[in-house]
Length: 275
Image (cartoon, rainbow, N blue to C red; front, side, top):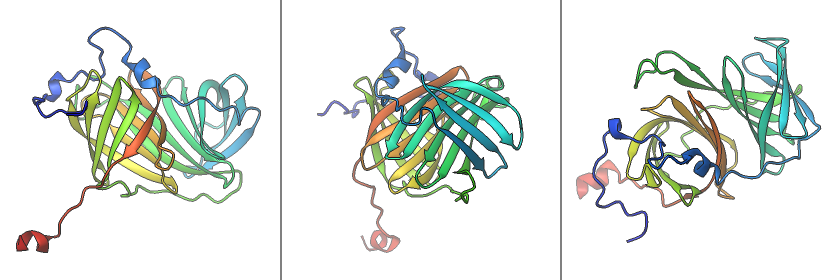
């Protein structure tokens, strides 16, 4: 049997999940970060004014030393500015994924920018009261997707896609953290931990998938038993994945190698009826 074999695994109820708590007291988050892709300096010294579908126009200035200064030029919060640590990955030539977190009220942001085609997508996670499937005292994680463009380029609005339906993937974050995903529908997937403190735990998650470029996907899942949203930028060609996990207690920047295996195949009703 291979190392991922879980044939003898007993069912683990949600109330007994580890939720990435290391029983040995170690930093589980650090193991997710083992696969983090090296930061790119290609944007250092450059500035982009990004317009978004909600009326925002925000200047992003990329500084040396892995920091980024943002200034709201138009829309809600006009005049606000700040400088945050950032992690920039060049996921493909001229396509960058920039991860950073703003202060109170906290906003965790993953910004995907195509500097060649002047396209952008901001994935913004905020936190508020009323977690609907867990402890009501914990804040809800809420994520929105905002299509955008550089400068005066036309905004090409992106919408959730069903491109992953019936697909199965293995996400290898490190030798200590490996997860399987099965994408059941446009907004539902099942995950299972194959290696790590959560080994054997499995659950259903609410999801969204956006296609930013050919075989370049932005995937979001919403944890059911913890106040957290995860965002992955998945390149199905290079198998490289970068992203973040945002919970009420902080943001984790992570990376993985992602491998898609044979897709699920469903027989037709006629085939089933005919045996």
